[in-house]
Structures are given as C-alpha cells and as structure tokens.
Amino acid sequence: MNITQYTVSELKDPTGILTGKRYEFHLFLEFDEEDELLEEDAAGIRTIYVVDGEEDKITGTYFFKKGTEQALDFELEEEEIQEVLAFCRENAEKVEETTNNQ
Image 1 (cartoon, rainbow, N blue to C red):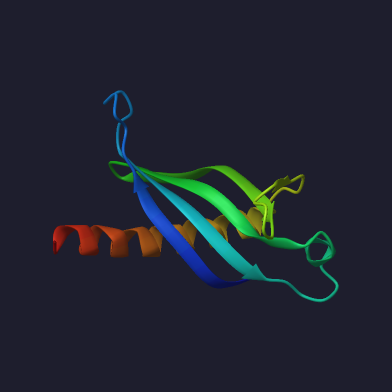
Image 2 (image 1 turned 90 degrees about the vertical axis):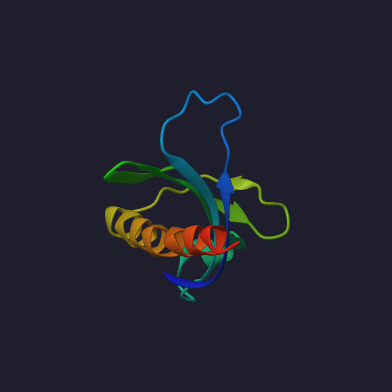
C-alpha cells in the first residue's frame, strides 16, 4: 500500500459529549497491478483518527471507490491498520501545528 495523497480535517463535536480530538482522513492510494482493489477501481481509504489523552486509534475505516466515494466491502489487514494509524498519527500533528500558528 502506497499513500500518494491525503486530505485531513479536524472534526468538531458541537455537543461537547465526545472527549479528545477527531480527524477525518482521506488517503489516496496506489495499488499493485495484481491487487484486487485496483480492479474494483478503489481510490483509497477513509478513516476517523481519534486522539484522547495518551491513547489514539482509527475507527470507521473503509476503502472507497474513485469518483463516487462509495464504500467498498474490503477490510484492512492488521499490517495495513498499523500503517494507517502511524500515518494518521504523524499527519494529525501537522494539523495541530497549522491550527496553533494561526
């Protein structure tokens, strides 16, 4: 799995019920030629990254189709979950830096 582009935005909880911070990531991927997802016209992964104190996780993760963002019925393998989590962890900090500098 090769992440070629991404978008990220911080999600605000208008109710104040949820603790921590949440970020929505759209990860655009490049797939190997033999990958089944390439045949399904997949564009990437959408996920919510949650940071609550010292703990973080990804949730609501799914592959989406190019152009329509229709969810595809594929699951991430454990190795891919760890890769996405590490990517989100690294890039959510960039959103924090941008927000703090404004």
